[in-house]
Image (tube, rainbow, N blue to C red; front, side, top):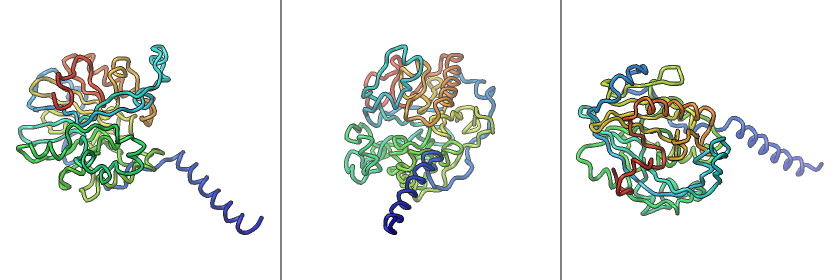
Length: 327
């Protein structure tokens, strides 16, 4: 073998070994610094359920940031027995990108997830989705309804924080419109969870978090069903629901109109929620995701006053009359 061929063989072998290692261990979601949350105290299930059926002090709104279409096979595990029995097959599925406002009388205004940035509709090439990842995600199919910059400009009080359900790109895409001194909160281990897909998305996540303080991680207890009382008064809870990502978090708010559960992408679709089927290829650990989904569904079955907000679709009986703006 000539020297040139040996060098070429070595390069190819190195790339193959790197790719194989990457496929097995993956890369972390972000290299951004983290620190324990300054908000919240660990709580028990009993504390969560004590007054869950009662209205609370939280003023809450749901907003549709954008309409979109993505493959159903990513949103729903089509190999699940329930999906097979229903004869479901892959197709482009209409979905929404949501964010939620949470107003607490003492702690101020927060958002759950971040919607989309102004640039996505107006200067898409300079947005977080301006590159290859945006091409793969078919950003041209994203029809922006309400960007975060426009929404923030209409608020009468400053934003006190961002509560993320997880750090997939469609949930952090609005962060560039949010002032950099506004703290970002996420589930424990969310930035460190390793997936192969992070080889392509970690740069975008780091860009969205650049210049910001460390991500503040919820102080969940060590068990996998952790609960944090975010404001310490039983009005708003963070729930540990791993599976979709390692640090996926759901939120339960006791609002002035009753309890609302934001499940994040533990369940993307109305059909998935109705039939207890976890997401498809968009989720990291389907078995763990299914257990988290089962837990949330049991919570709602035991407390039917809870209104559910799914990751990317309305439930039929809860869709607002004018979908596209807010409830």
